[in-house]
Image 1 (cartoon, one colour):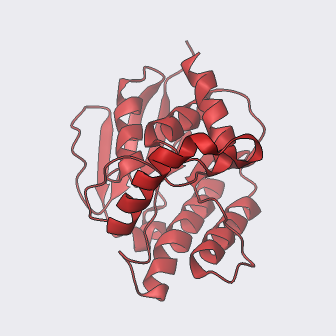
Image 2 (cartoon, rainbow, N blue to C red; image 1 turned 90 degrees about the horizontal axis):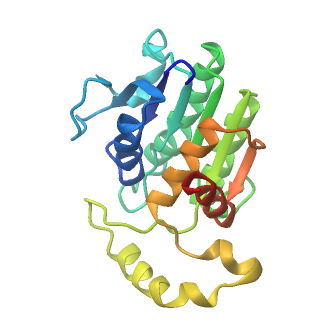
Length: 224
């Protein structure tokens, strides 16, 4: 087995990030997982190094931002963060800064969860911010850059998102109707996103933007 690696997770207290942290702790390919967060994670393990910081000031901690891989699972909603400037600081600022630090510190693999429909020219603020974030990440030209664009993410979040909950219930019934080119619009489980991210971090795969249906295909490779 090759030398065990160090990973950085941003967003390890969220739905997808917490699952990813649990998986990496159990994965023998990783010897250390650095977590940059405002709050403590629920998992306790000797592999985990926690840095409780203000993520808006991530650049101040560039000397600690060293690893083989970065997994950026940061994301908010306009309901949770109604102020557009603050929302942009979260969904654009943090991933863009993380990519900048990854480039500076010669980290070879950078993965970030974006969203389906991300487009810097979109008239919708949410999609536009995600698109601008993707552009800022790609500009860093990190050797292995993967931008995952999942559709609606299933699973139970700690915070209340009533409209998202209703839409998930609808999608549970309607997903089977989405076939062919429409498959990418099916809801996706956070565990599947995590499977795909771990596969991408440990196998050769073409870099760039990865749509939701392709995330599902990559996750199947991880399971096989």
